[in-house]
Length: 176
Image (cartoon, rainbow, N blue to C red; front, side):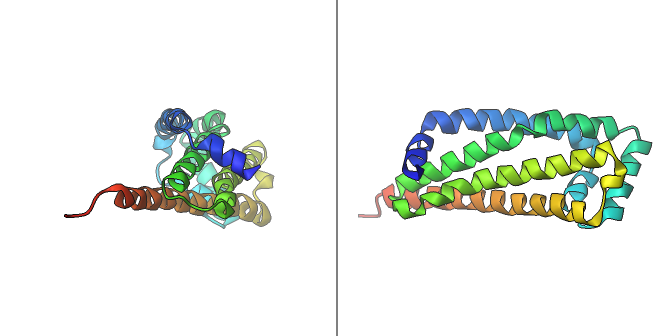
């Protein structure tokens, strides 16, 4: 199964398509959430229920809560695009560096990051539905998932870059 996944992801077409979809999706999300400012990152990463309540209250008072709610229309599918992009980048890097198949399970990490993103989104949507849902446990679940998402996404980007650099060094002839 993992060998088949690696083979399917090791495609310039998958890389280009997921890259284009990610870029459009990310740009759309940035435009939507830009007015929310730094609180957008804070609402995803704080482990404090009172902080989440305060941020949502500020957005509501400023008339920004509908914008925050609307961004989920894009953000629920967005994890698919970056998961595919990172996994395809890893697959291309694995192929270019002849990484043994025993490492194929790492191709699943971007999808785990995406699943964490969806978990975070679902928890945050529950906060919008009813502020009573903003409990310490719910914030820990949602924002813990967000922190794992960010860590795995960063690890994926660094890994793809490292594999690309390593492949380039392997294929560039040295001095005579």
